[in-house]
Length: 137
Ligand code: AMP
Ligand code: ZN
Image (cartoon, rainbow, N blue to C red; front, side, top):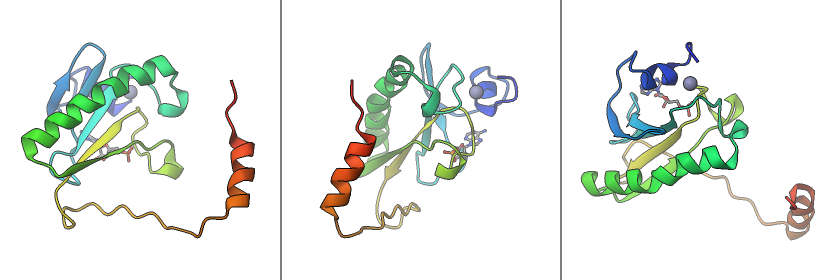
């Protein structure tokens, strides 16, 4: 897609800091560097997000994630890594070409705050919801 900024990066039309590349996947440093080594892993083929990818396309992308993450952890001596993927505006997606964020973690003051609001478990509601969203064959 010519108006997609990540397609332009794939095509070499705008610069990026590549950390991994093969025929199908590219990984480059996120310009905002939320934490040191913040990397985006993308399929070279354009997909808006994970919600429009099939399992083959998703497998191709995710198959590369462990080795890129392990390399970042090793080279930067990160203590951990968050792997995040935002789909659609409501989920925080701002660039509409599928990408996986790899965020190396160092300590509590490394610039990233992820908080999950916890609630008391309601087991009856959980059972009902599981039935509602159950994915059968
Ligand atoms: P998201 O909010 O999940 O859609 O994330 C999009 C990410 O793309 C943001 O973290 C941006 O900092 C990053 N980004 C946008 N433009 C570029 C670019 N030209 N090179 C590298 N990263 C970019
Ligand atoms: Zn694109």
